[in-house]
Structure formats: structure tokens, C-alpha cells
Length: 200
Ligand SMILES: CC(C)(COP(=O)(O)OP(=O)(O)OC[C@H]1O[C@@H](n2cnc3c(N)ncnc32)[C@H](O)[C@@H]1OP(=O)(O)O)[C@@H](O)C(=O)NCCC(=O)NCCS
Image (cartoon, rainbow, N blue to C red):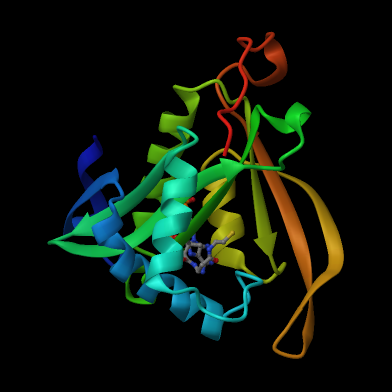
């Protein structure tokens, strides 16, 4: 299902629409070559993810299948036929009482950062998750210096809820983890629909 076709994005100077039109849609196994290249860049060059060895395309396909088999969204942003970035939501933790809480992940091709693609992707992901039974979304952000991720999540309605100091160690440095969170739909304002996740 196409989620949000023809989303307008900014160019690097902030001019709306000048960067062309962006389609946001459900990811397919065929997108995982591009998704793997994007993620491998961040694994190998940055601290936004705590993985240190880039997963294979086959592993990315298995992860896509794991997410979608739980009824959760895995979206890509495509510009002129090229994947600019992707995001997905997974269960925050596996113990059953966490079942209404999701964790989001989002990664862009570095050449596409700062143009509004992340904001469009995350907004589409939130809309999709609000159609399901889930009530909270948590962003687990590696590094207090990840200004783009903190700003993106704040812009999408997340609030800062805490910091775990020095929880990661990558590239010879200790890395704090920043937690941000927002409600989905009614959040804690009403009782959720009775729901159990499908067996993974
Ligand atoms: C984090 C990331 C997904 C953000 O996506 P993006 O397309 O660059 O962000 P956008 O252009 O949509 O900007 C969203 C908001 O963040 C702000 N922002 C973006 N980059 C910023 C930066 N480097 N510093 C400060 N603010 C920034 C924008 O001004 C915008 O704010 P606004 O809505 O108030 O105008 C992207 O930079 C990325 O892939 N980073 C590397 C991987 C990563 O850190 N992933 C997140 C893991 S938790």
C-alpha cells in the first residue's frame, strides 16, 4: 500500500518543493539492496546505531519480514526511483506488558539529510502506527550529540524522557542514550483495545 505519495520536501536551502516530489510507501524485499547500503553507511561510519558490522542484504530482508509479519509498518522514501531513506516500527521490548509500545528506527542516505525527508517519513510512520492498537512510540537515540535525530523527534511531537549515560561504546568512545517518547492516538488517556501480538 502506498502511504503518502508526492510528499513535498525542502531543498538544502529550505525552499519547499524545489527538491522534487517524494513518495513514501511500504518497503518490499527488492528495496533491501538500497536499504542495506544506507544502513551499512551508518553502521560503519557513525554512532547512531550500536551495530558494528553491517548486516547483509539477506539479513535486512529477514528483518523486514520480521517487522511486517507482526503487522508493523516498514516504509521507504523514494525520490525519482531512488531510495532516499527508510523507517520502521518494532516492538519496544518483548515482554507482553510492553505490547502497546513501539520503538522507531529511521535512516537516510547521507546525501538526503536535512531536506525534510526524515520528517515526512516519521510522520507517515506515526500515522500508520496510530491506525493499529499501539499507544506509545519510543525513540532510543544514541548520542546526545545526534542533534538531527533529537530535532527530528521533537518536531514530530516526541518529548525528552531520559538519558542513560555511557550505555554504548563504539569507535573508542562512551555513548549516552537519549530516550524520547510520544503518545500514539489516545495514549494513556483511554484503555486500549484488547490485543495480543502475533507470534514472531
Ligand atoms: C536523523 C535523520 C533521520 C533526520 O532526518 P532529516 O531528513 O535529516 O531531518 P529533516 O530535514 O526532516 O528535519 C527534521 C527537523 O530536524 C531539524 N534538523 C535536521 N537536521 C538537523 C541538525 N543537524 N541539527 C539541528 N536540527 C536539525 C530540522 O530543522 C527539522 O526541524 P523543524 O521540523 O523544526 O523544521 C537523518 O539526519 C539521519 O538519517 N541521520 C543519521 C541516522 C540517525 O541518526 N538516525 C536516527 C536514529 S535514532
